[in-house]
Image 1 (cartoon, rainbow, N blue to C red):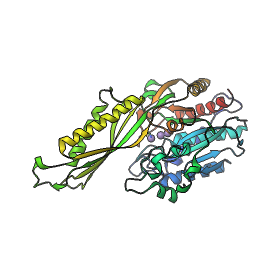
Image 2: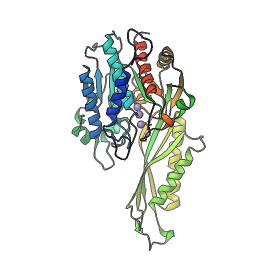
Image 3: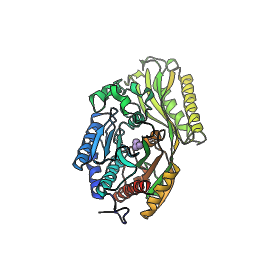
Image 4: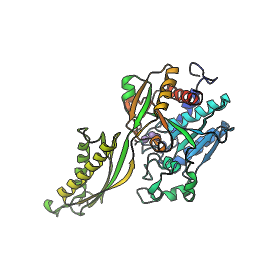
Length: 419
Ligand code: HGY
Ligand code: MN
Ligand code: MN
Ligand code: MN
C-alpha cells in the first residue's frame, strides 16, 4: 500500500511492513503484567537492537552500534563526507510502558531509509537512522543516555547506576556498549546537519482537535530530584505518636506538597512524584527511611527553576512537620528547547503536500531531540495518541495515523534534500 502522490519517484513508506515491524518489536520485553518493559541498557533493549539489526541487514542496509549502545543504520552506498541528516528516536521503554513511545520513530525512520535506498536518489544530506539507548532512564537512572553520549554531554552520566547501585559501566560491558570507549561515541561538531524525530504525542491534543500531524515548536525542560527521607524505625505499638519520626509520613507530606506546586500553574506546568519506596516496609514498624523522586517540567527556564525551588521548600516543610531529615538532590536537568523554525516550516509543507492538517504545538514529554538540539537544528513530528494515553499498556495510535506520520517524515527528508 503506498501513500497518494509521488515526489522524486518516491511514493511513500511500506505501511504494512511498518506495522508488522512495530508488532514484532513490541514482543521484545512484552510484560506479562501488560505493556512493554524494555528498560534502557537492559538485555531486552539489547535484543531490540539485535532484532532491528537483523531487519536492516535483510534489507541490505548497513548497521553499527557505538560504545554507548546507540544503533545506527545507513544506506549501503552512503555518500561519505556528506553532512548527515539524522532521523530516529529510542527503543527503550518505561516499566510496563507502551509499544510506540520511541519505537515508532525508529521503525518509521528505517522505513524512510529503505524508501530512500530503493529510489537511488542522490541525497546531499545523507539520511542516517539512530536508535538512542536509554532515553527513559528507567533502569540506569540517567535519561537521554545515548543522545547525551553522542553529543558529548554525558557529564556525570559515566557514574550513573541503577537503583541497586549497579553501574552503567557494568551494563555497557555486559551488553552492546564499551565503557572504555565512550569518547569515540561523540560525533564531530558540525557533522550532523539536522535531526528529525517522529514520535507519538503522548497527550490528548491532536486526537481532541482531530488533527493528524503535530509540528513540535518546543520541548519541555525537566528537573528530576531524588529525595532521601531519614526518620527512625521504631515499634508500631510501643512508640508514643508524638515521639515518632515516621519517614513515610514525611514522604506523604512531600507527595501532596509536590502535587500542589503545579495546581495553580503559576509555578511550573507539571510536578510529579513517580517513585516511592519506604523501609523496612513491615506492618508493625514505624518506617525509618524512604526514597522518592519529584520531577518538575516547563517550557520556560525561569518557571522550571521556580518549580525546583518549590520542591525544595516542600522538603523543608515536610522535615519540620515530622522531625525527619528530608534531603533533595538533583539527579537530572534537561533544558527546554525550541525546535528549528525552518524545519518546522518544511514539516508543515510536507504535511500539506500529503493533504494532512497540522498543528504547531509544544511537547510536554521530553525527547532525545532536546539533547541533540545542542549540536544541530532539530525538528519533531507528532501523531495522535489514543485517549492521550502513554507510558502505559493502553498506549496506542490508529494504524492510518502511524502510516501518515511516517510519510510526513519521508517527505520532510526529501524536501530538506531537494527544497
Ligand atoms: O518522560 C518523558 O518525558 C519521555 O517520555 N522520556
Ligand atoms: Mn517516554
Ligand atoms: Mn519517547
Ligand atoms: Mn525521544
